[in-house]
Length: 117
Image 1: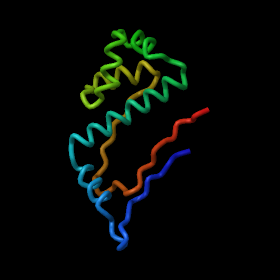
Image 2: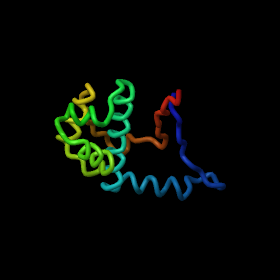
Image 3: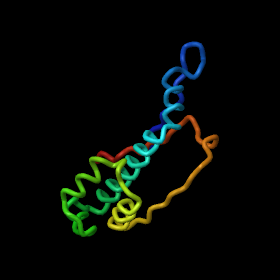
Image 4: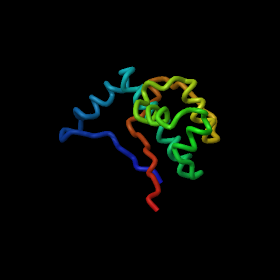
């Protein structure tokens, strides 16, 4: 199941300062890069959890050191496309990139919830 974060409206029925700031950030390359990187890391961690893969095992699969994996997870905006591909393949997935027109983006973001069981 997913949690939905709706558009925040102010008392006058307007969009509100938070939503205005979020719309501004969605056009900031640094913010977009951070969001993309965090999304990738979240997906990798979910696949690792589903498959019972530890960070050490991920490092072995990628033929890199364990500290390298820590750096990748701790500084995600600095990930190269090659790193994204290597991590994706190491957890048995294929990375997919798509570009959407800015006008097509919506005010509602769906965030996957982690199963706490």
